[in-house]
Length: 157
Image (cartoon, rainbow, N blue to C red; front, side, top):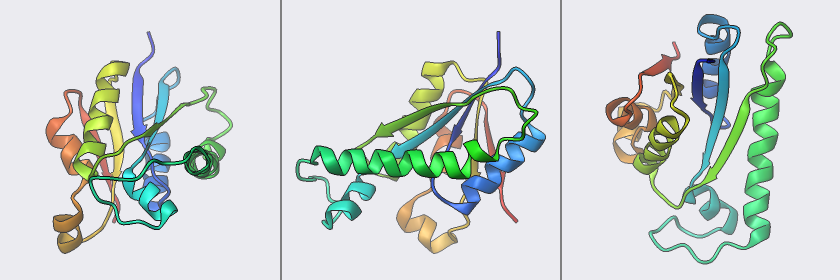
């Protein structure tokens, strides 16, 4: 039975560097790798040009499909295209739309880890700084405190 690794991703250099570290230092032949991107309400708010409040107007299908296409494009560019040739696995990609805040993006990650029966969650930590982290929250912090499977957080220098 393969070891299942869940790797939450976003379109940042920190996430990409964490992926590179995971492939170099943690991945083993035969591992089943799952990439997870959560499209939050903040993404839709930016798409629609409205504030990210608890009530978001009905999202039209084109905006949703556009957000999914954007996620697919950065996942291919930043993660799938960077897999070394010797790695024979094809990661499984999950894109989940969530109408929630930062802490609940972490909740979505924890639920997916349990659903997959993941051996662990590996994720990057963004270097936001203490003030931004206080106001925006930290997904990696939430996951490390609430996930029921082991969590590896890759810190960037």
